[in-house]
Image: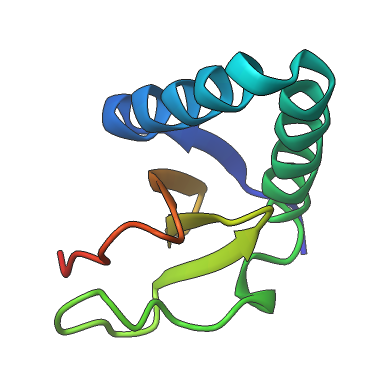
Length: 99
């Protein structure tokens, strides 16, 4: 199976950048480490997007919306035929939102 392309929604990029900047206020090294780890995990989705469970916060989810948590960040993504779209990045301490 060939790998899919990774794409980011504008909101997902904004949320990820905001989270990394918040971490950097305390530690640049931690921010760089978290950023690298999350981006590596996102890149790994290209070849195995179904390795994480369906997103329990997605209403009427047919299984194509999935999520994972890493470093207290929750990344929600959509698995399409040719693309994996990163939708949201939220800190796990924040109240989850259905979408």
